[in-house]
Image (cartoon, rainbow, N blue to C red; front, side):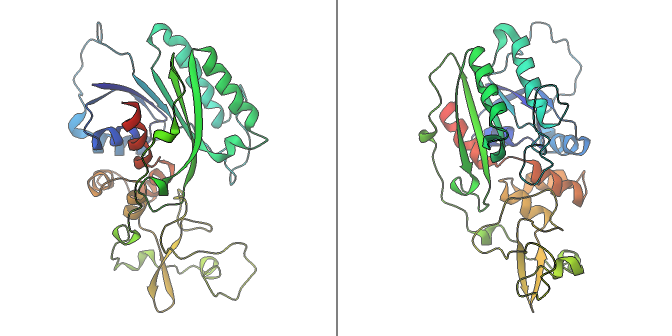
Length: 304
């Protein structure tokens, strides 16, 4: 059994990946501030959760793997760039709390720590904090390696570049060259037949950004999806977004919530469970904040 500690747990992407690989998994703790994301997580893993009250004395609570996808809003290129300095109080600075947790674990340190974030952590104005994170992990006995990974290389038709940092306790650095790449799924397997008008683009501000629109007063354009979507965001009714779907008669629609979940690697069963406890806005947000399941699958195939 693999024991994981999920910080900034979202809707459980790493646990989904382990489930898909058939690896018996125990989450010794899951931490998430978004109540609606917690609802989705509980619904997806309903059959695996034990709600009985028991003593934890003598339980093995030592995690094998710690995963933290700390908030990116203050680092992202489209964010406010407030940074992630220690003690700054920004959301992105919460990565330092992960280090504090590891320091307090003593002999219980996880063998593997995986940190996912936007490419912005490698930019000049943010790189100092990234390097400091690596230095502190090294002082705790970890070797570090990182790489920018694209979801399209792991089976998902979504252009999504994210930095994955893998830290191994008392071990040689992780070799990203061992990751297995997968053929990208045909986008037609993701896009569903939609009959509802709710997703048709109708607002003037969005119509002005459609292909061929003559109004150039708005910056940016909405791009039709062909072979793959752009990065799934927390909102689709804005520009830029993940791309639009042509429906004929010079009309276009937004991606549906289910399509966004599929583009992150979730099954329809996962989506339906979450949709049973959450509405449209929350489901878009959860997809946009998630981490591609396919990347975790490839990582775990090497690590475990």
